Figure 1 (cartoon, rainbow, N blue to C red):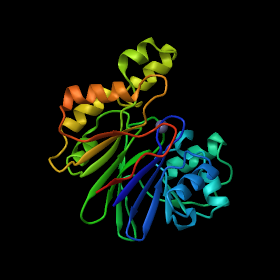
Figure 2 (figure 1 turned 90 degrees about the vertical axis):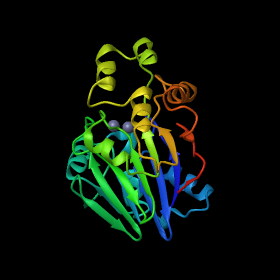
Figure 3 (figure 1 turned 180 degrees about the horizontal axis):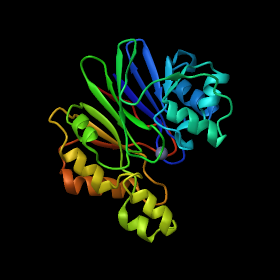
Figure 4 (figure 1 turned 90 degrees about the horizontal axis):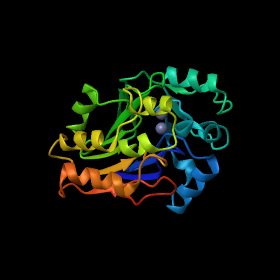
Length: 254
Ligand SMILES: [Zn+2]
Ligand SMILES: [Zn+2]
């Protein structure tokens, strides 16, 4: 299984997973043109993407979804809650009739099985994912809200993970956001801090071969600070990567 972050963070999320002939995108937070170009730079034709699966409705995960459907005819998959919220926000344009799944549903695309796990994040019927190719299990886990039981349980089964390490609490407190936005981010329906993320990884299963930190805040975190906090809690053993907020990150394999 190959995993590539085309971008991860509050300005746009789009993640590529490939196994054998099966190619999927998780989230559509880049423009259609950016998605096409970044895939092309990796030698991947956007028309070979079998499905685009959305985690939740927020713009940083969905703003390119309409174009991926209308211009590239890529099938969109989402929960009913995501669909209705996207329509209500009126920022994505027409998305036709997508393929729906229930939170907690298991999806199958070629050799890949996708388990969907409801999150506590403040979007209707938002989910995170475990991608299973029959041999290895990859977690795609951002916009989580808090560290809920099903999340912790899933993490113990993983071989690799892209996980949100959104903010440093001191930077958030001293940063540009007003109190209500700060409260939203650190609340139980917001995002995970560097420390919260690192503690989850500390309790992960023995199989975990690497972790890629994602969804870093541009205002309230830096890659250096995120890595420092993780190293303090995890030591040196686990290979750690940080997904870029602006560009494609290196290929990670399982
Ligand atoms: Zn997000
Ligand atoms: Zn979100």
